[in-house]
Figure 1 (cartoon, helix red, strand yellow):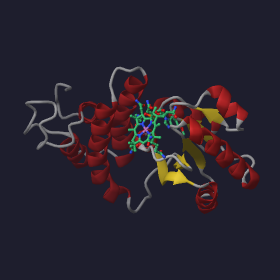
Figure 2: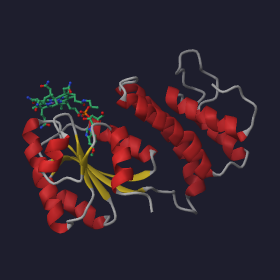
Figure 3: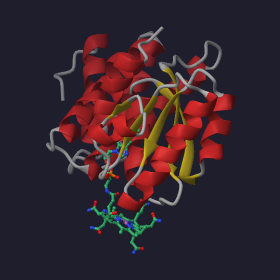
Figure 4: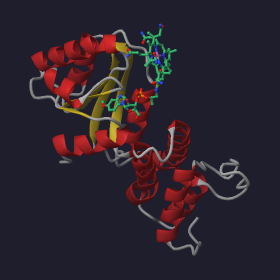
Length: 231
Ligand code: B1M
């Protein structure tokens, strides 16, 4: 943890650090022995009390911390449990900020419609991608698992400016991924559609007409930044 003066920059560094260690609040004993010490929730309270703008707390505290975890996950330096507890800690901070954004609208990088393709029930990877994209500022519309192409098309119609993400974990459901991309292209030829999942490759993504392939959530964030830059 950063040696604490109560300067806003130190408070923001502590928020980022607590997100990385997964310390959501003072009651948590993660890391071991830290029970009673401030976590994300308490540091966010302090930042708010110091009049740090909520956008700054989000970008330089919460999102900064989760981005570090996303990069470490891509580099196999941390694993799924660490990502999940970091995402939970991030949510503890988001819950504090939500009322402050209520009048202004939560700042959003854009809308991302995400689903696991038809016939496929695997959702752990999808959920991780959603969590980290949410941490990067995307508003997530999670359409779930076993998504028929019609369900995806209906969600896109509801959110016409969205980017779309598809996940597949089975070699047998890669076919469904191809069908989903074709159905989306019929109604929305220029839609940004990115794909991922263990059996999916860059070559396969090209073959089915997807806009791009990302091997992990961190790569998905970078890919979307390239394909659909912030307005
Ligand atoms: Co299933 N399963 N499973 N399974 N399962 C696999 C995938 C399998 C490799 C196991 C094996 O045989 N070794 C195998 C697939 C073989 C193949 O097709 N090549 C398999 C099988 C065969 C099956 C069943 C058919 C088993 C059966 O019933 N006979 C069945 C199918 C059910 C169905 O979907 N219709 C089945 C069922 C299940 C459970 C329900 C029991 C459970 C899923 C629970 C759940 O998701 N809620 C399950 C699990 C847990 C697995 C394994 C063990 C773990 C998958 C996982 O969550 N990995 C898996 C074996 C393994 O991988 N060791 C296996 C962790 C997750 C974080 O990784 O999803 O790859 P992943 O996501 C990564 C990246 O791929 C990427 O980011 C994530 C983080 O890095 N990513 C994206 C994913 N989507 C992305 C999208 C993007 C960008 C990146 O942009 C949009």
